[in-house]
Length: 160
Image 1 (cartoon, rainbow, N blue to C red):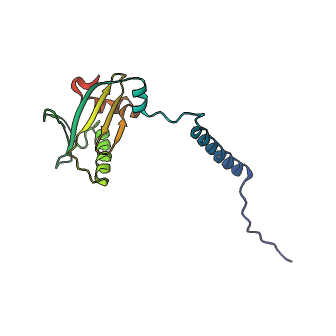
Image 2: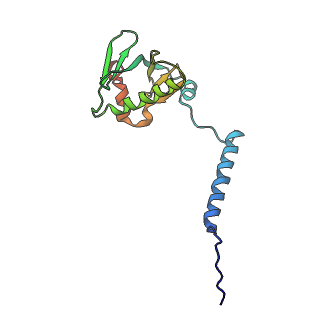
Image 3: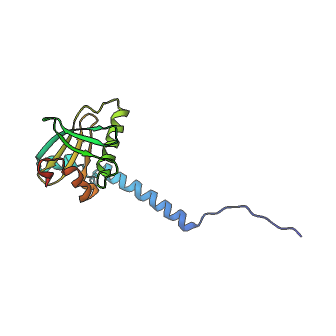
């Protein structure tokens, strides 16, 4: 008696069809953006410029790590300590995390932490943090109102 043993592996047809549809859709959408039928993702700086939105408040700040793990925020114009974000205090994690990412990018580009960051409250209510040393900008409202507020408190009057 001969027993046939088959090791052929087959993929379900519906899974392959779904994958093919996904690939074709991605390629079609990319082509439509490339030829101008669909617009690209909105770029906040471009959208603000097109809408003629100007800054309401700009504050140039430096962020420095302290030996105990705290982050000290200073106003570059006045030298005043604006705030100290202490490690482990609820609400301080978002600012510390964003600034760790910004510092990491500066380190990879060989830029020190001396250059200020621009915290800007725009007249349309958006809040952004820009690092002119690296060209990176973060729209802080994208992370929700609590995280936006964590940076807004660094503006005069709390950035309300």
